[in-house]
Image 1 (tube, rainbow, N blue to C red):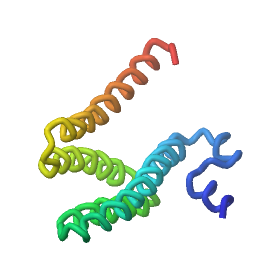
Image 2 (image 1 turned 45 degrees about the vertical axis):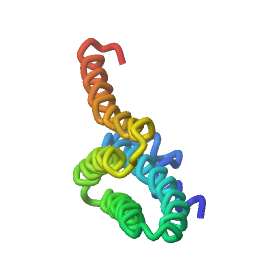
Image 3 (image 1 turned 30 degrees about the vertical axis):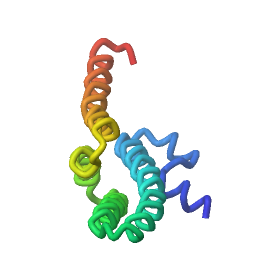
Image 4 (image 1 turned 90 degrees about the vertical axis):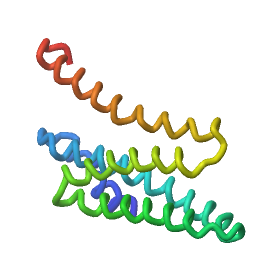
Amino acid sequence: MLQWLKGFLFIRDQDFLNPDRTILKTSLLRIILLSGAILTTSIVLHSSLIAYELNLAFIISITVSFLTVLFLALWFTRKYLLASSISLLAMVIAACISILLFIPDFNLSQAGITFLLYPSLNGAFSIWQKSSRYYDVF
């Protein structure tokens, strides 16, 4: 099982020696999506029980839809790397909007705004990496 997971995430020794950048991109995206799927699974299990007790069916549908999109994006990294990365970005923005709309406590809903920092930080890191390659720093 562990060997299959290492092969799926491209974290074996021979994968580190391969100079192909698409393997690195796929590996990073799969690690992010898998950790997000594990976290979302725990959220689904916890919040679905509470939502069922409080008769809030829309909470169950929202969390299960996020989990479904995460697993689909993880599955589609095999052929459609760009589509999977765009779906990850769209899910982060959708999570931000969901937190802002469905949490009535204003102080708690402000945590949704911090999710918007992820796309901007990701863009800043990619720009920094490109500029550092230009100046031969990194």
